[in-house]
Length: 357
Image (cartoon, rainbow, N blue to C red; front, top):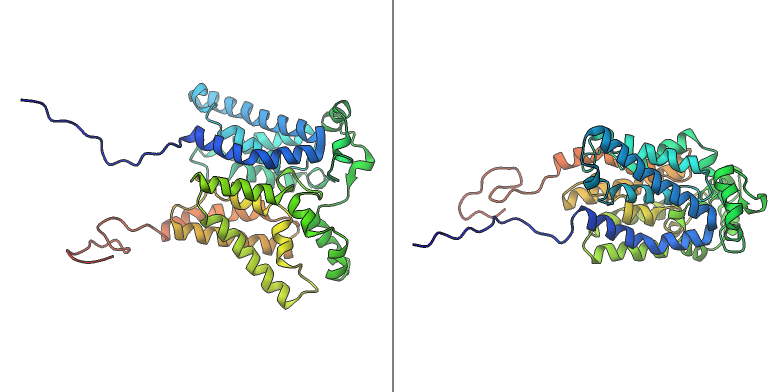
């Protein structure tokens, strides 16, 4: 008599694990990153390298102190991706220690204080970005004019002085990003048409030919990278569409009511880190809701908060704060917006035979 054959349980299988997911995100970020490094030159390359390396070292240190297997978890790509995203959110010519301190904050406070990978409540890179912005407002708002004939014209030796010595060429420093210019000039009493006439075309903003962080360089390349993530089924369209749609609709309504006070909605999409946020930050598995409706509410909340902070807040860019505020709401959203359990109604009551949910 032959023994019965054993079959595995009905588990869901996927070709994506932690390492492959992190690698897929990094691959999709690569075009926008390379373009940003080209635009801002060697100082940006050095800052990017320091930030990513510091995040990896901080990960190894935290794993060793916690007694966890270093070789297993330090090579899953999560720390490298956190450092990568943080580097893209920094001013390209920030001093090296800003990137190193930010990486330490992201890994130690944003990630391992909560227990490590998969247990953090807040997006680690945005925790670091927000803390740096509050603690170091001068270093975090010093922008440079992009382009191979400006920031990119700085040689490697001179870049060492910029990143590690704080000696930036005066003629390469720009006054403010697009969002900062809009906010400061409106506060100075200029009309909106005068403000928009002096900040460059929307096309330049979409292409990334304006001052800003590496994550604000090319909205087009970030959008293409996000579409690639969707096609690879790493993320879904719900959160990006909710973030972009809510921000656009709020900006369009404000512009229609007061065109002399609010910029047109496409300026919000082209400026700042909206595309970076919508596809690569807000979609973090750990800090976003699990249901479709929950993801939509989460994304709409981020989009509306970005508009509110940009319009009335003390900081011209609201991505980091919007993401962190909605990260805090994620457990509440998951508690109230639950998926229907098989065999039960959405209220949790058992289905009678022949009932439909």
